[in-house]
Amino acid sequence: MDQMTIEFPGGARVDAQYGSFSIKTDQPPIGGGDGSAPTPFSLFLASLGTCAGIYVLGFCRQRNLPVEGIRLVQKMERDPVTHMVSKIDLEIHVPPEFPDKYYGALIRSAEQCAVKKHMERPPAMNVTTVVSAAAGNSR
Image (cartoon, rainbow, N blue to C red):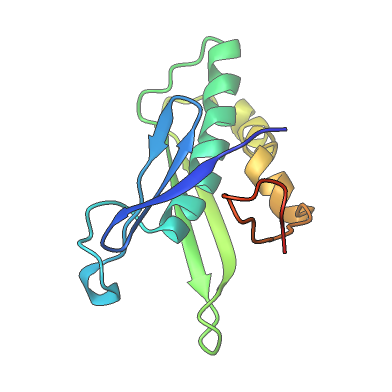
């Protein structure tokens, strides 16, 4: 089982330790933070675009296609009542010299993104409280 440890280093910061990586988050000043790092939700949104980007990059590398000038632009629409993201558009911008015969394949590669697939079939999430001093106790 994979494990990530979430800690509170001060202020409104909430950081995650995952293997040898430290993933830092913060809230903007209006939310009580210093704005020293992205918010957790911003990282979530970025994970969608960067994951799709990994697949686009892999597609291009497998075919020795140049990636210079390629970029993904992710646009989010929010529900005006709930303020939750209701739609995400991901555009793959390619330079004029990029072979148009690969446009559809680029889209199909981006759609293989593991984050997108997990959103389509979300995992079960269970939250418990564990008293650290008495190992094994959970509530």
